[in-house]
Amino acid sequence: MSTIADNIAQVAARIRAAEQAAQRAEHSVRLLAVSKTKPSDAVREAYAAGVHDFGENYLQEALGKQLELADLPLIWHFIGPIQSNKTRAIAENFAWVHSVDRLKIAQRLSEQRPAELPPLNICIQVNVSGEASKSGCTPADLPALASAISALPRLKLRGLMAIPEPTEDRAAQDAAFATVQKLQASLNLPLDTLSMGMSHDLESAIAMGATWVRIGTALFGARDYQQTHGQP
Ligand SMILES: *Cc1c(COP(=O)(O)O)cnc(C)c1O
Image 1: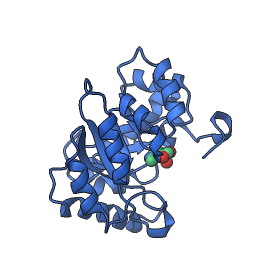
Image 2: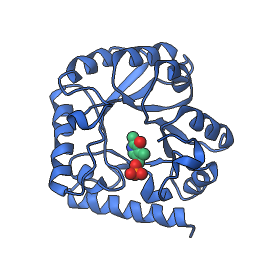
Image 3: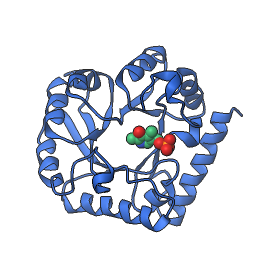
Image 4: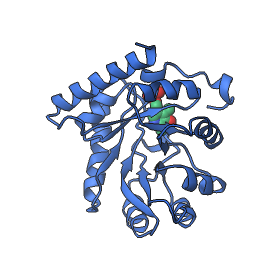
């Protein structure tokens, strides 16, 4: 087994154990492999080991990999900060966007989603760590943003995404993810997705209702930002 296939098996076992601990159905949590800064060959290896969904943060890097991997039926998710001049390429080349945090970006994605593609799946990124994070809408702004986005014709609002402040303290992880779950429930919209949990906190996220866990390091190893594009 390759290292990546080995890592995938280990992460799948962690996900299954966390599903069981939370008395959740098998496969109710899906694995999004975060391939940012990693070469196409690593994606190919993960695909060969059974992973189909890949998350990228940087548009140019993602477009390059999509070209190199066009022979594979991969599902691409955009998970990074979005500038308005990038929305057209995102609307044209991804199936999901997890990091929408303002209406202007959502409106552009809806207008620019090609007619021949299905609606773009959207998660609203919500900031549950206050000033520790610059990305994500505030919990106070969430209800109005969610209702405006659910009215946009070429988007399908699926749920919320969050990146809580990193901590190894399980109780603090649980509290942050529980906040996201409660915010989602308070919206009273037909949402089926909670995108939360990374390599270090996936067990807590799954206990609190995650449906996508976004895993990079535990699958592909540590990232070297210098080598690929020189920005974090
Ligand atoms: C990089 C990244 C991840 C993966 O984090 P790991 O700790 O490497 O698992 C998940 N989500 C987002 C939004 C990221 O930018």
